Amino acid sequence: MTSVLQAQALGKKYGRRWALRDCTIDIPAGRVVGLVGPNGAGKTTLLKLAAGQLEPTSGAVTVLGGRPGHEPAQLAKVGFVAQGTPVYNTLTVADHLRIGARLNPRWDAPLALERVERLGLARGQQAGRLSGGQRAQLALTLGLAKRPELLILDEPVASLDPLARRAFLQELTQAAAEHALSVLLSSHLVSDLEQICDYVIVLAGSRVQVAGEVGRLLAGHPPLGLEDLVL
Ligand code: ATP
Image: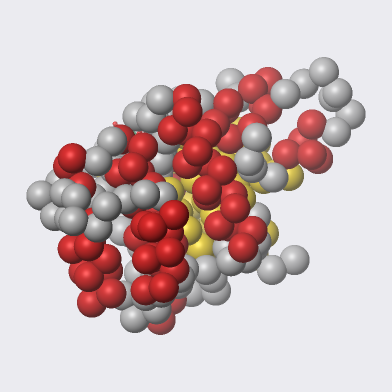
């Protein structure tokens, strides 16, 4: 099994408080992995450690065989879509594409343009004037156009209505399959992840409660759903 992310006794403290403790996981490549847990469980902390935006307090994490945030080549293979909709309200859709092309060595301009056209995002429109669903789709497009091997998304559908949530998750799973992309996304709602993830990590109280293939975790417990794994 090729791993996309391996964590060994990984921990992160803010001041005197542990936000993530003793996290040991091994995530196979090429999956859509759901990170689920209530508010404050440590999801963002784990995702930022994986993206190299935070340094561990204890333990170690390896992403795509390297230490996150320490090697430019490895950094370019990891896309991170931050919580909220990380676009600039006063910039147009076209501005976002131009900046993306300038900053990212693996930028796939045809992919970005094709997605913007297909999603009906007017290139001259300011991002702040797009709907919440469109802003989320723009953020996803920017993430995909970086041509990452691993795309990390922090609660990407938290603020969207049910229709926009479904459309976003459909786009994401389709893109993951098309580009043989590994995806790690978080949500505090199991219902977001149930339909699209084949691997799940359940965090609660800063610790991993359960991690593994959804099918295997539920095997032998036919009446159980993913919801039953979350404390
Ligand atoms: P949410 O779903 O609310 O975003 P989360 O599961 O992503 O929560 P984290 O954001 O990782 O959880 O936070 C875990 C714990 O660490 C929480 O108790 C939070 O208050 C605390 N925390 C997060 N960031 C900081 C920080 N920069 N300084 C101090 N404490 C922090």
